[in-house]
Length: 228
Image 1: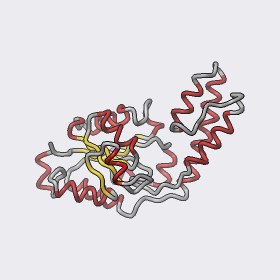
Image 2: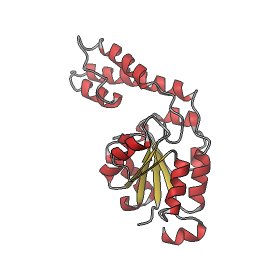
Image 3: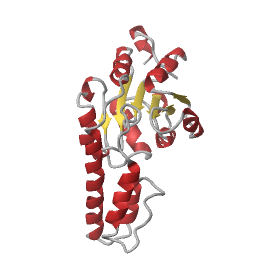
Image 4: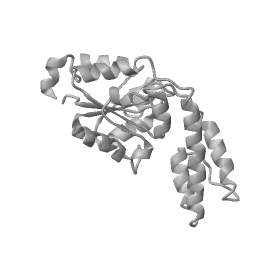
């Protein structure tokens, strides 16, 4: 089946990774001592899941205060890192190329909207939908994050492709029922992304789109829009 829509992760896929997650987790763990004698370990799970799991151990209103304190740490670090970040040189080119041949595109990210807009303020000129964690009730790897984007594009999951630099992105696509592709432009190698179950994996999204076009999974020119 042809690919009619490609949904991209943001950090590490479309933009350079500038956020130090180890430092973030260290700050969260330190903050946790204000609420726990011995806070749950933050180093064995993603930060957002640690926040929800830890908050669930607290009575209200402490749980609400804990979430707010933790999210303030995360968003502050995200926005600060975004001031040092930039899109990869090929990102806007790839979006323009896909739009020219009639492929719909979107971005889903666990990052906050202010951070994304700092790095990619003109996103609406290049892509069709942006869903940060501020815009959805559930973030990836929950498939609703991805299916929400595809629904906004009016594209069935079987005609969608999820692209990201992290095994979580691959799992998100598999959870939703789309094809999946890895971009080794972040912290994981092509081999690791294939091990995570990616259907395709390349060094970056520019090379990936070229490969998909050669495989006739993505249209080559505007005359091919009739298949979409």
